[in-house]
Image 1 (spheres, rainbow, N blue to C red):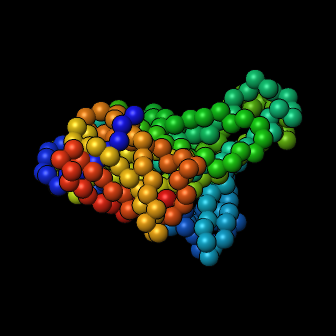
Image 2 (spheres, rainbow, N blue to C red):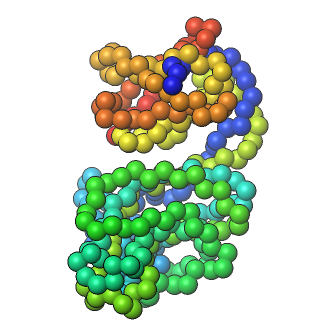
Length: 287
């Protein structure tokens, strides 16, 4: 590990930018309960199948609960263009649950799924629609029994095919052998996507790209910058308290460090010092 610094020089590198915005990645809504069915109260999102649930408090935060049972399941989707060959940085919060071990069929596969697809239409049919042949798996994880805490999911996805939709759903394979009471659930919130346009541009180091910001504890903060010039990175909270940061140099254009439990939630100034003793500052929000 090293320490970091930023100078106010100009240099050229490939920057991650996002010309396309994900609609309502926070899943903010105007209702709770059966909120994804037509008409959806979660702007930009629809049920692909079943009756997904909107949880939370309308004054604070709402999020999605998706369930799967032996003969029925639920999913949600939104429109988003995935272009073959581009790199997508996806982050979200997720909580999963299954009671599979309480019943038969222990060898069955219960999964939480994120898919890039197209041709989905809003529907409350309890059977999951068949994914188009052009679909690609963005991420998939086995759901174990017992309720988990929220976890931060970070994904780097480089599609080989073009697709126009982002799809979330839990699934139970070989479900004909399962007890009727077996179920799986996934809760999702705070979805964000950044894209790598591979566009070579000239920028000032004061505009170094940081992702994600705001960031949640447990996530990894990443910089796109000229890593060879960096000497030290320091966080200052609103009282002026200083906290040095140990960082990793992932490659010549990327630096990263983990927002761990030693860093409290709040608004910080990220002070970046380069080897020529010049500095730059960025506002960082840790949630």
